[in-house]
Every structure is written in structure tokens, then in C-alpha cells.
Image 1 (cartoon, rainbow, N blue to C red):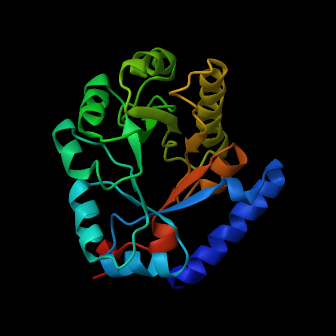
Image 2: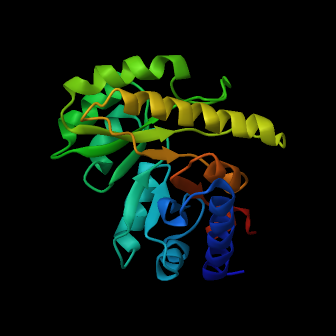
Length: 228
């Protein structure tokens, strides 16, 4: 199927998941993850009606920006090296991988205005995953008060790669609970209204558990690196 057909299927599945959870499908943003596809394929996603694009690497982000005819809402969703903040800060609307104060300091220094940052949380506790331990998140949010160009727009996590739906669901629920705890603090710089969770293989579960941003690559735009 082409991108437009894939998008239609995904939108339908999100609508159904929202119905099951008693939610409005308009609350969920679809982010097309374009890491493994060409600028041409990314443009197809935009032409199909996708408003949000996500990149994992600054090189990929800058390459696509230079080739695309349109200006989507860009999300940086990969691990961000402090020294590369200056390269992407003027191009992205959301950074999904804030996980340390040194990175916050650099974002704050380089940003000309407030940047929407999502704190990356290792909700599954896997050693292979980046992100803060859930028990460290509240203190981290409070430490961010000193950085006036950072707005804590939400939280991000990656579920474990498993076929056990309950394990996946539990990791998403942890993030939702953390979001509620942060919102109770009523910090002006940390509205924390976004939950970035769910990818091609588990976005339906994520939506049922409260996700407002699903990061979908393979199921939406495919993976051209696998094409021989």
C-alpha cells in the first residue's frame, strides 16, 4: 500500500482504539518517523495529510528539511547529543528525548524562545533503553525550573519489544501515572499535556492508555533500507 492508504488504516485503528478508551481521536497526533526513508517518501507522507514528521538523527533531519517542499511540524525523537543541539534547535518544534540536565542547559542556551520538550522515561526498566528511571522524573522536572527556554510539554517512552500485551500496557500506564503526578504540581513551565508513546507495533495499546503522540515509521512510510 502507498502512504495515503497506510495512513487511512492507521487513522481508522486510532479511532477504534479511542472509542474503546472513551477518548476523542482528535487528541492523538500521528508522527511519521522518516528515519529509514528518503525525502521523496517523507514528502508523500506530507502530501497524504501527515502534519508531523519525526527524525532520530540530526543529519537525517537537516537532509529532509533541505529537500522537502513543505514545512511540517518537526519532532526530534532520537538521542540528542549536547554538541549537536545547535544544529537542530531552530528547525524542530518538539524534542522528545530530554533526559539529563546538561542537555537541558544546552537547549536553554541555544533556543531563542521556549522549546517544547518531552522527558524521556525508561518505563520498562530495560538496560538497553535510554531515559530516566520513573522514580527520578519528578525531581528532574523540578530541576528544570531554572531553564526558562524549556517547557516540559510531556513525557516519552518506548515499550519493551515483546508479544506480551500486558507488559507493554503496564509500561504505558506508568507514564500516564507520572504525567498525572507532574500535572498535580501545577508548574507553569511543565504543563505536561503530551504523552509520546506507541510505535508501529503497539500504537493501538498506547492510544488506549492515553497516548497523545504516536511515532509510526514502518506501518506508515515503510522502511526503504530493507529494499534491495
